[in-house]
Image (cartoon, rainbow, N blue to C red; front, side, top):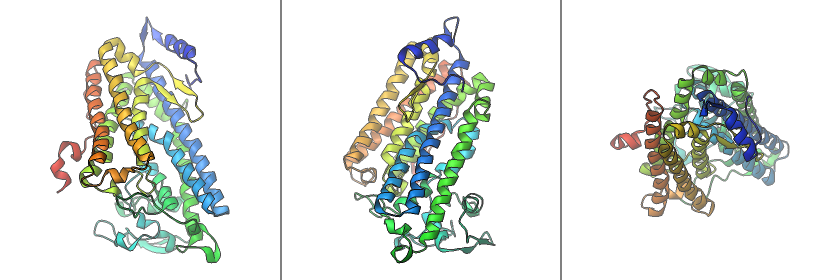
Length: 423
C-alpha cells in the first residue's frame, strides 16, 4: 500500500503537503488515498469476518446460549467495516460484480432452513422458496438432481446462489449467516429480533429444528466462504491489485468512480431502496438486516462510507486513522464554498442517521419505525432519506465543478416514480 499510515495530525499534514504539485492537490494523490481507504476497509472487513468465523467454529464445537450470543456479536461487529465499503460498489465494476456474493438481500430464507408456516410455500416466482437445503440432502433444481449430502462452500456458491436465476435465492454472505444465527424475525412491527434457539446447533436429543449437524455444516461453509471472498477483494486493492490498478490507470475516470459511488449509494440505493421503499410499503421485511434488527447500524455506516470517501479519512477497527489528500481538498481548490457545503451536508446526513441509530439502540427498533401511522418513526427515517437526497444534489454540483463527465446515479422507483411501487 502506497500511503497508508497510522497518523497524527502532523503526519497527516506532511502527507498532504507531499502530494501537492505547485501547491495543488493532484488527482493521483486523491485516488491513492481512495484506494488506501478501500484496502484498509476491506482488510478490516476480513479481520472481523475471521473473528466471526472463529466464533462460529466455537459455537459448532460447543453449542450453548453464550456461544450463540458471541457469534451474533461477532456478526454485528463485522458489519461495521463492511458497510463502510459499500460506497466502492458503484463506479467500480470489480466490486459491483462481486458484491452479491457477500451482501445480497432480501433473501428467501426458506431456501436455507426451516421457516414458520406463515411464510408460505413455493411460488411462480421462486419454486425453491422453501427448499430447505438443510433438511434436504438430495433435491431437484433446474431439472437436475443435486447431491447435497455434504454442505460445502462450493454447493452454496456454485449451485444454490441465485438458483434458477432467482435473485432472492441468496445462499451465501452476511445475510445467510445472519439468518442462521438469528432465525426469522416473526415480531412484525413489534419489538424483538429473530430468536433462534442455541439448541438448533445442539447434538443428539437436545437438537431442535432438526438436522443440527447439517445446519452447523451450512453455517461453517457460509462463514468460510465469506472469509475467502473478502480475502480476494482485499487483495484487489493492495499494491498490484486489479481494483487499485483500474482506479489509478485513468485519473478522470477514477474521480468519476469516486463520485459515482457517493451519489449512487446516497440516492438510489440507500435513500431509495433501503429506506424510502420500506417506509412506503410499511414492511419490516424491507429492512437491510431484518433478522438481527441491526438495520440502524447498516444505514449509519453506509452513510459514513460516503463521508469517508469525500473527506479522505477512515478510522480502522483498531482505532488508527487512514488519511491523505482528499476529494474535499480537490473541490476546495475549485470552489471553497462548495466544499464547505458538501462537508456540511455530509455531517447533517450523519446526524440524521445517528438519530435513527440512537433511537434504535434505546429500544425503538427500525422495524417499529416502519409501521403505518407511526409519525415519530416516519420522521426519523425520512430525516435520513432527505439528508441523503440533499447531499446527492450537492454531489451533482461537485461533478460539475470538477468538470467530470455527466454521471447517471443509481435511481429508485420509490424516489423517481412512486406510483410504480404499488403496481
